[in-house]
Image (tube, one colour):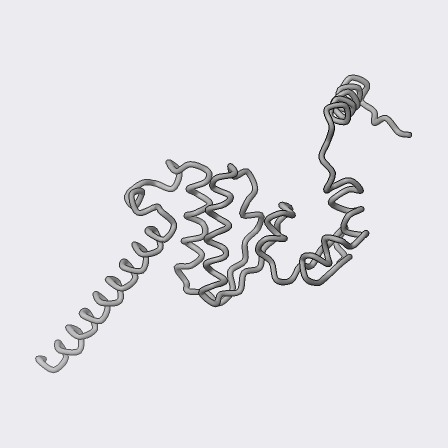
Length: 175
């Protein structure tokens, strides 16, 4: 009987070490995403931005080679956007591949090595960010002809008036 008990004891020690290692890794991830103080909190009690950070930390628990993010900047305040951007960049620095869907073109330009733009389920452009952002098909589909021009007060008033008219009449003003 003694011989049978020894392997069980070793297995228990190995399991304990493995759990301790996972716990240490979990704490390191929470610290990386500035969530260590929230360790004992329920995810539902976190702010929207903190939940985004927690989602990224959770994705890293499996130590993946590829992380896929779906609109990580959606609904996030500008300060947290910069924080999330820094975290995504650090994933790249760690040698991880990051694939994401994002509509924030400034963020895409800042972080991407390669961009694939789709419209209506088809690829319309592919390449380095600076060339894709200049592609007329991308401009027409997503950015608009005057995407890089600042709005004047008059332009803004015209846009607001047109929107108000559309809301009141229920129809778009077509030229």
